[in-house]
Image 1 (cartoon, rainbow, N blue to C red):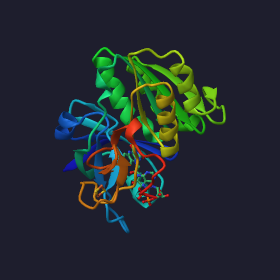
Image 2 (cartoon, rainbow, N blue to C red):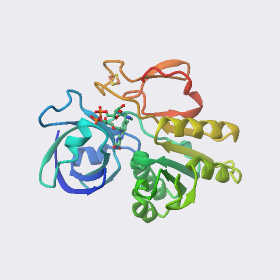
Image 3 (cartoon, rainbow, N blue to C red):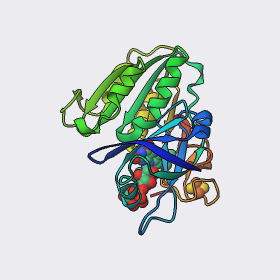
Length: 256
Ligand SMILES: Cc1cc2nc3c(=O)[nH]c(=O)nc-3n(C[C@H](O)[C@H](O)[C@H](O)COP(=O)(O)OP(=O)(O)OC[C@H]3O[C@@H](n4cnc5c(N)ncnc54)[C@H](O)[C@@H]3O)c2cc1C
Ligand code: FES
């Protein structure tokens, strides 16, 4: 479907787009994603996946970090232009009815967590967001997260904002005070997700993670995105991207 970009903000390597996409906005659930067709000279063949960052009314937001050819071309888009998006795709977060949810996001991993924080707050859940990045500029959507009413804690590896260190250090501090109602939802780079899963296991807390595997078709057809979870190979694009952290075979990589 074609979606018009009604707002495009660019900050260093990050790009925030607001798309007019009524059907997508109506159907999307936190943790689901869209596949964006990249257009332009030497555009990659496959669409590129991006988490749905927030929805309001007829609008959907995406947060894109430039890392290569596809995201580089997408970054040049401005308000008024159209993009071809497919979605919503995949299975999102469930958070299994627990009343106190800790969201852990690294880099652009905060994108799906903003949508999740808004939905959980609307349901009256208590939400604490732990945001981590290399430096201050990597702490994205801080203001928007605070506006959801969630408690927001920031960490940076260089100490330029929030507490110095990894976001998993802040998570461990929270888990020391956990209750039976605590649930963890995380999105970000795989090493961070693996560390979150390790802590969740050590503290006996249920956890869901959104995996950012590289994808080809994005539709469950090519098996290009499989991971081992719950004892079998599963497609991140169709069976995920959100999985129970305790069931992922973290040591087994099928997708380099
Ligand atoms: C479910 C899902 C949700 C995502 N949500 C977002 C989001 O909200 N915002 C965002 O900016 N990005 C997100 N990504 C990652 C994004 O899809 C990739 O960064 C993008 O496809 C790279 O395309 P490219 O053509 O620019 O890079 P390429 O030229 O294809 O590759 C450039 C570099 O990026 C690395 N790369 C490619 N794909 C991925 C990937 N999936 N994860 C990590 N590294 C990758 C490659 O290894 C290579 O080093 C998501 C990925 C998945 C699977
Ligand atoms: S990317 Fe083709 S099956 Fe997932």
